[in-house]
Image 1: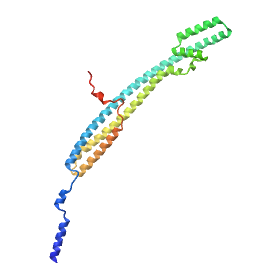
Image 2: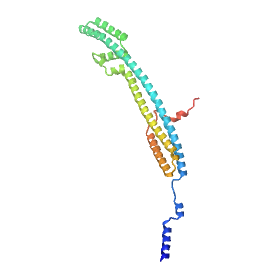
Image 3: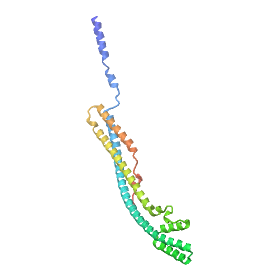
Length: 253
């Protein structure tokens, strides 16, 4: 009985210990060599993407400055144009004040049937218009006579003839300002992407500090997740206005 018990004990002890061949046959996906290879690949990809984001961000900043400068110049030109048109408008209003008196006298002459006075006042009005009225007022007076109106400033679109060009320049300056603000926002977004890429480079750089393989794998996966997030976010940011990368490879003859 004692011998049988000892035999059973030995058998039980042998069955509790896994064979050495079974441990060697277990396959491990992550190895030190694989981790080092993946880290090297991720470092290269991150470096290239970081350089791209920095370049595009600087282009956005440059275009932003150009748009702001154009906006200021256009706004100045539009304001100067508006002031000039306003002076012309005021001058035409004063001219019309005098012309309205002549037209009043002309109507009285027509009512009296005084042909000589009618002829005299008609020539006087024509001479005064040719000497003192702008092209816009001349056109408006012609429209008034043809349509039987009493005020040339009732002509449709006359305000656009005076201030249309100035308003177009001011509107263009506002659009350039908005474009510059959009470029500023896009540039800030690319700067954020560059910061995330820098974080990825930092995480990949410290992978080798950890002694255990699981810790290295965890840090590498976190870095890869940040890299994917930054890349997807970067793809949603529009490129600079009128950007064409082929233009940067053109050589002046």
